[in-house]
Amino acid sequence: MVMQSRVLRPAFISIALLISGALIPICVAQAAITYTVSQEWVRVWINTDGSIDIQYNITLAYTSGSPQGIVTVGMPKGGFQIQSVRDASGADLDYTDVSGGDFYGIDVQLEKPIALNRPYTLLVYAVVPEMIFTDSANPGNVGMSFYPTTFDGASGFIRNVRVAIGLPEGVTSDEVKHPANIPFDNVFMDGNNLVVYWERSNWPPAQPLKVGVSFPEKYVSLGPNIWLYVAIGGAILVIIGAIIIVLMRFRKAPYEKPRIAIEALGAARGLTAVEAGVVLDLKPIRVLTMILFGLLLKRVVMVMATDPLLRLQRLERPAGEPTPPLRFYEIDYLDALGADGSLNEMTLARTYLALRDAVDYKLRGYSRADTVNYYRSIVNKAWGQVMQAGTPELQGDAIDQNIEWLLADDGFDEKFSVVFPPDVIIYPRPGWWWYWGGPYFPSGPTPLPPNVPTEGRPIPAQEFANNIVRGLEKAANNTVKNVQEFTNRLVPAPAMAARDRPVRSRSSCVCACAHCACACACVSCACACAHGGAR
Image (cartoon, rainbow, N blue to C red; front, side, top):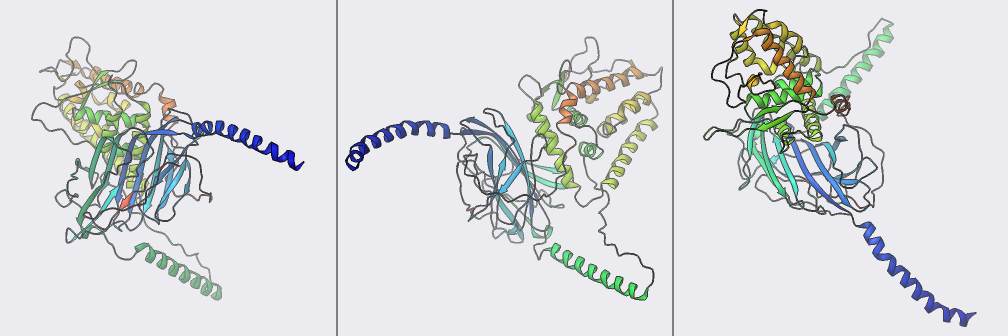
């Protein structure tokens, strides 16, 4: 038996090696997973306590292999708190904190089954403490350097990378500085806050896009955490309340249980008409139509067709005429515009979700009920100006001045139809771009914008009003193929709130992986972060 085993052993080993050698290429082929990242949009809000809020909007697609759909998103430092992780439809996604050593971040599990060549979008919201430090290069200033999470294992280029940093309220454009050789691509106001913005196309996925800001220290408080004192004060109040209860019981006298409440800040003012439309709970497709009207007013686009679906054309600015500043949701809306003039529904969905979440952020600490009432009063005031105008032409001018706020009224259709009395003739003015630029085009040989007629053609006022209402309905109903299906994917949406998560072990599967984002002590310093890779 011993001799036989010695004779058979070499043959057995040879066969085993042959079989294992044949299997190795198969295992390697199965494990080869590739992916591309088409967009990475990052929104950062700097809070007055030195913390930041981060919103990641990442779209990727697996192109080969058998992926398990796990994406690693890096965070700037430890102590971060995840507020929510969702996909483009608003559905919650599971995540695991995989921080360790000098790496900080989370693993996000995409909804299964995972399909190849299908775009997946994840929206990550986090709060990171103590991110603002003294800027040694600019005395009297504080600052932050930052770069979004990077993707070492991604193929090709990231088609579109954006970073927008919102400064604390009060910072002005002449007070904010950027790092050397990294100027802002745009600076704009978002409500009461200044926002600085960078955008890159065809960006290498493994290369950090390092940006930064510096601004006067007076706009932030970098001392002890105020919430610690709030918590201590709350505890003291609870103790005092308990003592009062004991004393009242001892006296056997009637008493009322102590109540501790924090008064809200009232109405959140400074929202745009589009943002107010979200607060007033207008349907998502109506909010998107309001964004379209804003672009019409700025003469950035015009409507080419409304049947069977909305088609737009982006307009070129005349030589020497500056491009009007665009808000972040207008930029996102334009990204949905294809070469043929059609609108990409997935991009429109992401546009609405990003807008809704930005509005939710702005309402933090404010009374939603008071905010709703405040903007209803703004809308009613706009209608009052239209109603009080003396002539149809003046009413038209009042509409021109207030059209964005009028559209924020859910009863716009009914009210607009009764604004103009019957048997009145109106001459649409050439400057009423919301009229001539679409979504209504007058019948007959009237030329399309921007070649609007130099003199308005007389038209019955009721017909004028009905044309606008029908145009609005067409623009809304034909923006997407199925309005109800599109709306159902977006609302009702889950609240952006922190949630407890079960502790899960770190997965060993191959996934779309990332570097960490980086924050530094000052705008002029160098960033140093732990790097990862595909695993």
